[in-house]
Amino acid sequence: MFIRLAIIASLAFTLGCHRELRPEPRDPVVAGVVPGCPSTEAGQPSECSWRRAIWAAQVWEEGGLDFLIASGGAVHNRYVEAEVTKAALVALGVPADRIATETQALHTDENIAYSIDIADALGVHRLVGVSDPGQARGICKMAVMWGWACDPAPMDRDRVREREAEALPMVAVEPVPSETWVHWTEREKALRAARGEPPRLRSSARYFGLFMAGIFGGTAPRPEPPMPEPSLGTGGGPLVRR
Image (cartoon, rainbow, N blue to C red; front, side, top):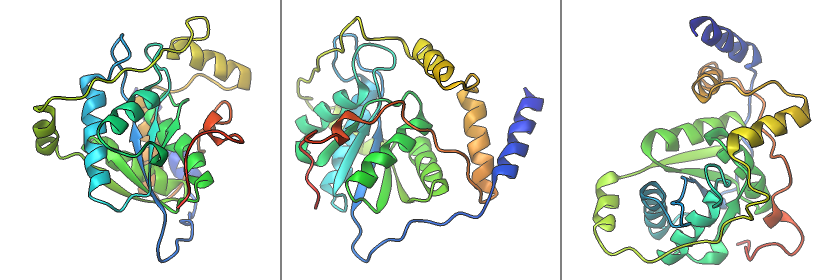
């Protein structure tokens, strides 16, 4: 394992190169990226889903965001994490036409990498990582590495617990068809085989490599979604640019 990590660190350093952030106007359009969690087997938000949605709704209420991007595919079960998060956000009072969904990510680095395409289509200039403290900061480190200004919004657990102690709204979404759903491990193998790519490194090794690239001020290839996000197609989605 140590040898593998050393190789990754070396590759990260080798890949490192000068990077520049995208230009930002005086009054930037800002989007918060909210990574998903697996829902319950009934399509309802899990405790983790509620925690992140509650925090994202509180960040939204404080102002400064033009959009929220809920990210995550149907990873561990037939319910798309992004759709569960969006349903929870709407139930908590966030306007539906200000929530975009990224529905293909299987991992945290893909949450931010795939959300970048959506942010770009919305005319966003700056991102905010909205999640648990470590993940919020990790999201922003990756965003910066890929040329986007980003501010972490690490979760205030005490504030979230206060809201969790109150009655939460009833929320549930529809599953994807059983004949089309594949567990993320098998889906990833098929996607990589179709692309002629080697198996993905363990997430711990993958993120260590990204971390090392960040330390040395470099970059690493940004994962590309396997297909265009449906909401970015013509006539797709109710999103309204500012």
